[in-house]
Image (tube, rainbow, N blue to C red; front, top):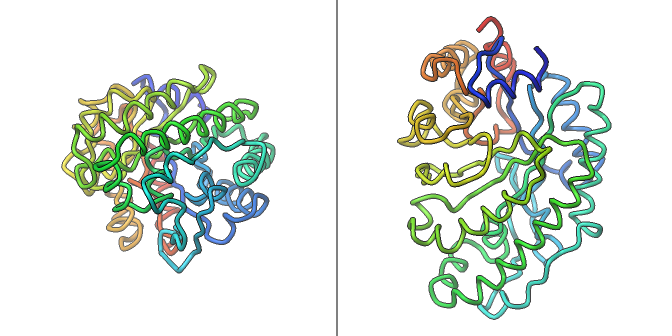
Length: 328
């Protein structure tokens, strides 16, 4: 059974030879240049032979051309720290215009993805491009606290900006259609009780999320939503038109079994990126994978962590994740 067949059967809830498995990480420094990010991604895939590749650029790739600046300051996630924002006054939201994917950082990411798809063309591995939600992009433009303040004091102005960011995202997706990818990994950061109320998410974020996800072409058979944080609004996951959902299942109240009850597609997780992958051992990793397989009755499960692995995660633990699904 090849990778695509294994994933498609998993998404449909059918038996497979083994659970599909994949991990992903940031590439600090390399993520500033298309060729370097492509090479690191390809080498990571060829080292571990994951069932799909999740391409992970810096979160700033979709907002850099609005004037934000960031740098890697040693964060173990490999994420970059924003040192300059683009939104300062509520009126600034009304000045945002959609970006063209043929120029700037978006064009650089498309070039990176082209190099990855060409480099892995013989491997026949499904590839997902990370796409950040319009609200996540807005947070990176303004910062979390200022965004929430503006949403509560000048919602119309923020929504004007969100409309422009959504259009920019739709143009990026349209450009991606020319590349042989399986779908997108859609990163949602605000479907969380730690950030928004349900009403705020439904009003200010869900309509834009649905608009983006409903624009993906039918040929993209594998699209995954990521619900970030330890308090996800998982009961809203069924409103997202995707085939799989990934969340911090080891760090929140919604475990894999509960996720399967609330969502009809595949659940992606089972491993804590800190407790199991970063601080654990190969033995604890293998034991946790067995637990995840049992918890889901070995159906509709994609073995992974709840988010990116740390850049300092022991390589023996990564190898253990890949080896643990064999024979299941």
